[in-house]
Image: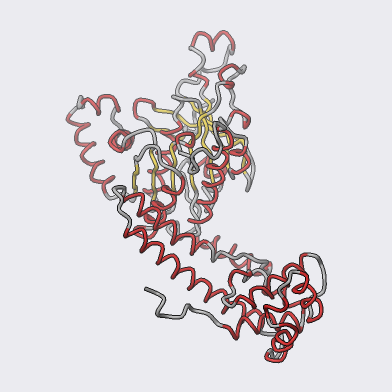
Length: 455
């Protein structure tokens, strides 16, 4: 359907860029981060620019003689038009000063051609006879996303520009709804240590089963929503109904077990109704699709961002995320989780939101004296530690010691009943350390400790 129209291109700009390189080889430094050979529409201009790239990578001079020699070496000189065409490129280029502007024109038309190609492939998907329409939609969204993500060329910027952005970010702290502001957890001690959850960061929250990692992640998500941040939760373990009841129990202050069974008092019922009214207006979105992969999650997140805006994503939990390439890693789960971890970090950068990802810990922590988790306990992959900007662990000594055992081993120290230590074991942007929270198991929520508590 697009054959009737000539694809977008700018031959004059292509010739001017190559001509600028032949006039002044330093021009290559100004255009190399903006364009690549595939961005050229005319094949002989693409070949000339690719040859210039090869010369630059070998630290050789770029001029008419060296380019002709390089094209001759690869048997392309005659096909591009010989020395006469290289002379033509120099003659039609007034000077090399505007090389960067010409490169931007090439990049723009290349993007338009890729958009047309993406539209053609999406159109072809529409004609396919498939029953899995959701998979088709995700594939179409991913096709379009690749066009956009290909535009994120990043080069060197002056220090002044970075500081200008820094000052803008500091000003945005007073306006938490701004896209550049960090997302606060509303646990004051944790916010003070982390400075809030920073945009584009991947945060890992690790713990052994039953210690409350899902509860803390959902608490943080709800706190963020109460502060005006839009949050999305990928609940790969619990159904949305189960998760909604846990959120309701935490917000209303009602025992989660009795709430599930409908065994609550009239006073509690009123609190439940009030909480439902307030929670219904919260910008919290839940996806409980099991066995989904990063491409699907990224597509859904981008759709959420476009329709409602998104400030925070929670993934519960990492080991339940499916690898995209079936059979690519065979039975090597470590490599598969490493790929998933890198993809989550990439998604955080693409969407410019913090992604709080829960992660299981290995059983080694249960056999260690004191049961204090370490970075090496992250299950299935050491790359989780490498990719993450922040790694936090939940440690609860009351999960391993009875009150009598604690008294025998720690005479004079109060029993840490319902006390959770949140250990920040890695913090790319600041200090590590730990803070303590109270864990209300029956209310499925964490609370900040009072200043009078001594633990």
